[in-house]
Image (cartoon, rainbow, N blue to C red):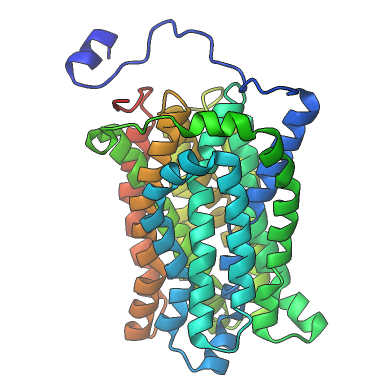
Length: 421
């Protein structure tokens, strides 16, 4: 479609000869060392955005036995943070403008530390309250980090998106793989085991402190920026949002119930937890490579189809031979989910013309996307409780890959979302 045709259709076209993209924000003292420190901080922050949630999955049976909660109730420990992601996402850009992005991100790590400490209290209410606090911290970080990448790494968005999404999967793999071994090695209660993940957030908080001190003036100046209006009327923004929600639903539903599914099929609990970790390790590869090669060797539309096909093959394998072919299914599922999450983040960055639009689009996509995703673990748990089998939940996940492909193809169009300053 030509630029004039796109304009008549009500969609802003990307200029035929766009000006060179701006470099990283100019901050006194910025250099190679500072850029590396900022990148390391982003990686550490991203590493903390999944472990406190994924660590619940290997401990699900233990939590149920100790607390007496039903499968659907335990699934809320995964669903509640996702609801926080959705409900708080629209507020995150406003928080970033008020506090400054760097200070707001520091606060998110403090919330994760506080939430993990709260879950130490021997009370089901405290367990859920701590989970909500953790979800609030992660919700704000989820939205602000893509905007920071767009602002400070505008010429390296592919590489930084790869590192960011790779860190998300790395944190998930770490939590899935070492939660049970750490518990067994330390002979710890499950509450103590969950609380251990606060140490990783504390490390990120300490590493991020120099960013707050060194960039406070710039953050304060940017905090006065006006929000973007009109994104909720953009069809392209809705396609980005749809892709974010559907791939998140698939990921969190699988992460919540995969160990239980494998255990029910005859796998030992320790090996089932390892399979989830192994899948996440493969996800690291897919999540890093997809944004790096996107637009160079293969288009984002083709990548969105590839990611869904890999997930479909993994889910079909779990239907047919969950134990015998477990490693192959984890490879396929992990690679497919890795490609999907990195594309969801890349769509937010590429479909937004600047950092302000990125933050607002990120807020919209994660508001509705994670609200949709929050239904996944609870609905699949309820379907399993009603059918006493994992066949129907897996079929539901397979069917949802069809609209995910459609949304991915729509979000791959080389346009910018419509929005007014």
